Length: 531
Picture 1 (cartoon, rainbow, N blue to C red):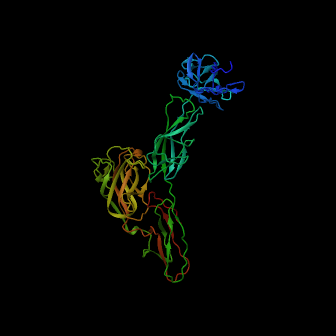
Picture 2: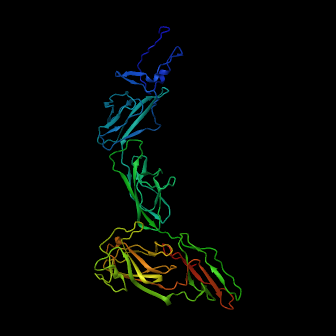
Picture 3: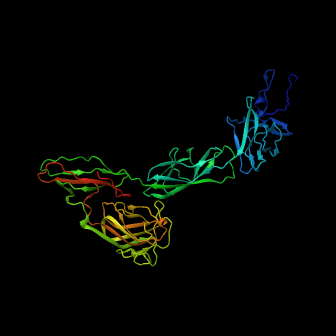
């Protein structure tokens, strides 16, 4: 090069595998660096006579510590996009298919493929199982890196339907079933929310409120909690989808992997308890002592003290009234239905008013003295607790109810719930009894007693709810009888659970009485063993 040459032009051909002009910036003459004008716009004219700018940004290849793979479609004749984000040389060709770079078949080992050139693989075989190719690329430091693309047949991910049993208003966690025979990483999306209750993501505990939400927990673990007091089989359900992580091209011909989670809610009653109740010591000729039962219920049910026996050497008083007997037999009253407020349906020949009055139909058949539903209805009226027919009846007076008798002439054992208006919460219903509908002989009349736990207020309206899905029969009811007392059962103490004990004159020694605790008044009626 002549000394003091004002303009120096250097021409050369090279493969810049890293798409970077870094090598050009290192030009020097006898150790003296030479500057380059506008190096980011250097032109590469070595590719088939075309002119294109070199990449100014460093686009180093991405190499994996594990073998990266791309999955071929279920249809072996289809093409799979394996385009790379860096320049590379193909060193080993596939054996069961063809690579095409920019629409041209890569036919020899060492072929150069420029960054982001569309690279497609297409299998030759209908019974394709696995194939692949290898490549090399130059890193920024000039070292050679190698990689391999493994193409394999992608099996479909699967989901499945499951049944989950959840305690009433209690949080339960479970995993959504999913599988993939290839061992691919899977994730779950909630596609349809439950119509009742709340679904949570186990990671973070946040509520899932929007369809299409991805489950953050890698094990697809979710939590569910029922709301309200509804329970039973078929309480609610939701759907989910299983997808493969986008680390490869997933099989596009797979059917959608979806599953349904059906949720049954069970009632687990927690019994009421006592605290702070102690024995009392009285002196002779004492006027007596107050006895307080500190009864509580963890479920929030109203605890009731039920006397089991009376003291033998003294008298118990409630609100100033002596309790002389625990038996309500002397003033027990039975009332038959006197009116109908509403009903779900009626058969013209057996109208709803046929339920009014005492029992007088004892065989199956059309009879205007009984109420029958119209047709077979298998659609739930409420989602939380399924019943398909109902009737609300009134009685001529209110009783402190202890029993209900129902005379069914068709579809016997279809009764699933009995409710009454809650005087402590206007507009709401209080459940007096719950049960399961059973398959029954549709032509076998049945008269049965429904036990009702004592509650601290009188009842004059009953709502009877039936489920035809088990009996698969019409509902036909002749009569309903309410059994109870006009006066509050003196042996049943609601809040504040207090009595007064007065010993007999000149009594010296011990005395005692027994009692039980009941958590009747809320939704579920159970009684404990005596204390």
